[in-house]
Image (cartoon, rainbow, N blue to C red; front, top):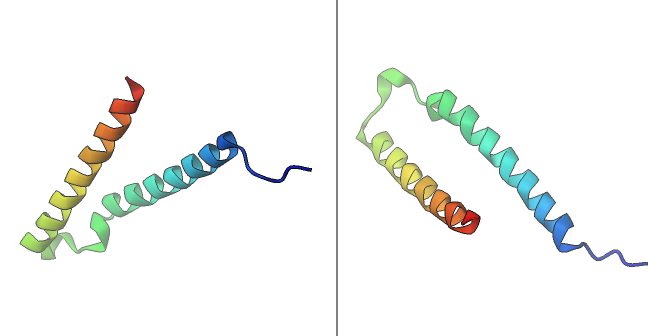
Length: 67
């Protein structure tokens, strides 16, 4: 009996993990990442800049794979 996962099994497991993380990121974004909107400072802006860049990097990876 072969209990070794297939590439498809591993792919689907990782895709599910990504979807879980994306849902959590959406929750955090909807809640201003837990920050009081009245107490936002430039450090928070910098954090979001890094997140924005990381998301652009990820989109570039996936857009490149789709082509």
